[in-house]
Length: 91
Image 1: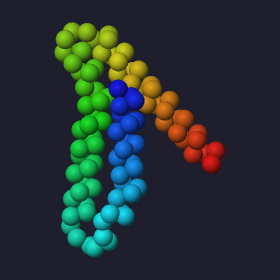
Image 2: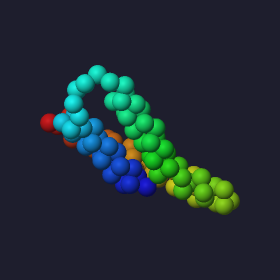
Image 3: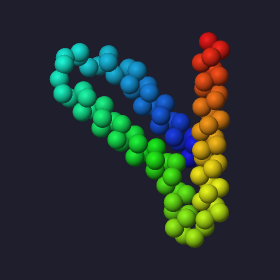
Image 4: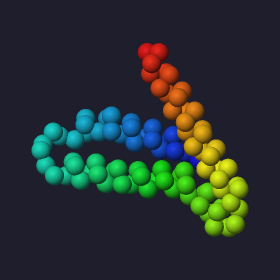
C-alpha cells in the first residue's frame, strides 16, 4: 500500500508541477475549485490506500493483522519520506 501511495502522490505532484503550462493565468474561481477538489480526492485516495485494508481486517476480527498492516504501511511511508528528503538535501 505504501508503494501505491507513493506512486499516486508522485503523479499528483507531477501534475501540479506541469499544470500551469496547460492553464492560462486568468484570475477565475475555477482554479481554486479545481485545487480544492484535487485535495479532497487526494485525501480520499491516500486515506483508502493507507487505512482501507487495515479497516477491513479490523472489521473481520483480525485486529493484530490490521494494526501490523497499518504500522508497516506508515513505517514504509516514513522510510520513503526520509530517503526523498535525504536526496533533496544532497542536491
